[in-house]
Length: 263
Image 1 (cartoon, rainbow, N blue to C red):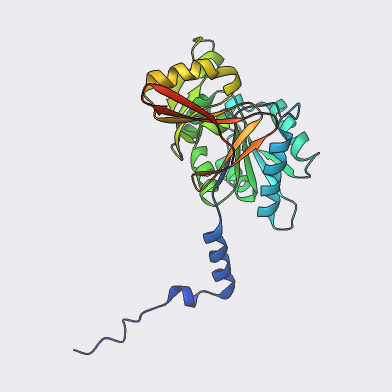
Image 2 (image 1 turned 120 degrees about the vertical axis):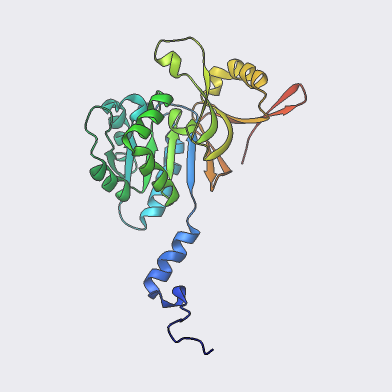
């Protein structure tokens, strides 16, 4: 039986306009980047060297135009002083347009906030109550916008809560923040980055080492204040310091090996 002329093999890639093909190639080359900061005070500019690196990522993505940054302060219950500190650094120092996604006190307008995400050349996720942040993101639908931005290659910088939420397991002080306990807790994160993480390691080292030993974990990343670990496509590629250090922890039998990570 002769082959029907209705069945035509189409080369979709070849049939795309040249401009669309080029855009597709650029997307294929785009890395998914997370800059995980262990802590620090953006108001006092203690993380400025790391912020400078984040700003360079935003300028690279903007491709010649003035870049835009979107601040997510959910973990601090949308603290406006926190956003103002972010703006004073990224606008005053690096000339980046600063905007904020407000979701906590009834301002939530998902279509309007989605427009902000689409315009952003990087996200900055601030510190605070990690559990509240993740619960709020899921309740409001913001989680979908955050993950979509990451998948599109929008660089993400996160400090403390904004950093540890990306890992499988996170060592968090949400109960302490709420005045419900004096103990840190190990919680599930988003699972985008593999393994366990501890922020503020210079303050929490002894507590975290005990939790690591008791929890049977095989490995972990520990981030001091004013230090960051950069991930591309889920793999650590660079350490950054504005005075702090990054450590890797591994289990070796009954012993725990702690090593400063320099990449």
